[in-house]
Length: 617
Image (cartoon, rainbow, N blue to C red; front, side):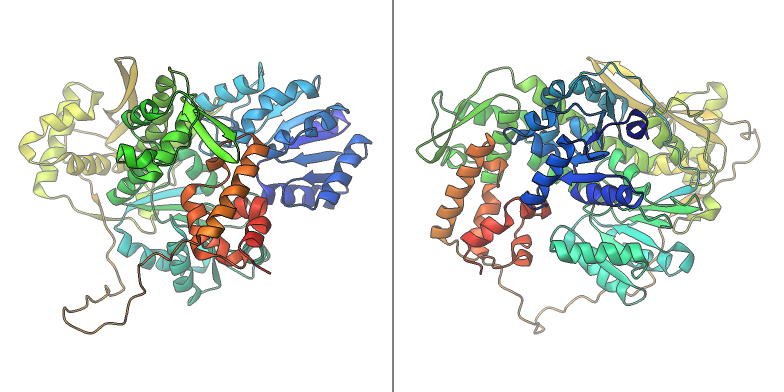
């Protein structure tokens, strides 16, 4: 609407091809002149779109952020000042965002060429910190319109459940026709495939993930949008650009990585305004899984220091660095990437080889800050899952919605436990009743105490912190307590904690409350194999041999791509992925996507060239 009101051509920078294609199609269906330029389009069509833009024959031109690094592209855009520049999914521009895209950082450098066009940045998942970073990166003195995070028609339910019980619970929830259409998010491709096959025996279901070919993913998405499929079981690769109004249920079968991602994913439910549900199943093991991948992607600063000190002052080949430091090659590769991002490593090329040298000092504080922020995102998700206050109010507060009054939603598992689909209750044990009585009595003496202090007062009840939190949750759901988040500063850091407050319903009488109970499995558990019994031969775990000639060819190609883009070679293709391709020698898209670390984005950019190097016809 702002673009149409201003007239001229609106230039839209959008990071996702699926989203771009969907928006262009809808604008064209409305009779508007819209085109797009991205890596998935034929060059002839992209050149024609650019020509139409230059001649003023478009209302909207969508471009992918990586196009901004193509020599001459921004200059071509700048020959005609757009009526408006719109940055979509603007959280991707911030290193504090949940879906940071390095290509988006180029926008701050390129926008001056397009002035005096006004700029708007749009996102549904920007915390106040991300909002500040967006404004700084784009050079804006922005008017901020932060609102609309509350979704009155989505009831959020969170249940603690061990992984083995989750497939059966998902099937039971979706067995009700009222809960479909639905999206089920799983943490891995393998789980998406397995759960998709299991659900497909009950109702029209398909899996969707980055390991599928483009054609297969497009077919699944089209079938879901048309209603031929009722359930999609997917990794987070699915959803952006999908605007299906009647999705009734969104289920997460594991703890999400960020609250921003969770909010975006559940927001795909109930766009028609009708009652919908978001269900999150989790356990303590989920956090450990996230911690494992966090440590791999963000090594300890001490590890980066070791790698930094081992780098030569003059450019040299990085081969052998992992062996000398006695570190895993993947850890060293991650450390080098982070050092490069923060200035601690310098890359160059000479005689067809990638060289690296020690960069500048002073990289560590910024890296520590980024690493702590990423870890804090995991902490935020865990606190949200374990919280005892209204789920929707907590999400709204996380994003700093300035127009929201902060009232309870009345429909989530905390506000309305009787409406839960999965979460069940049990009576408290004598120890739990005793702890609850101590909590209420202590708060009558001094209201608003920290939950840590209250736990210490309940020491005689013999409950660990986890058991004590369950009691607080029961009291909150019974309307006897209000639990509120708070912070205090220590050594320059904000430390989060919780306070408990009595409600008007809390009286000096008896303590009536229930506690959450894990649902029981209705499907029989898989039988364990007895020792000594013959079993089917398992597939060999031996890794296939790497084709050295193909590895050399891929390395030379990767180096040329890195030189053209002006980035280190690992930003084109990770070493582990390159070795996986050289071992698998894929002959088609499906086989290439099966290589760990190779996804749709890499397929669009480099798939044809890599398959040609592998000898595919």
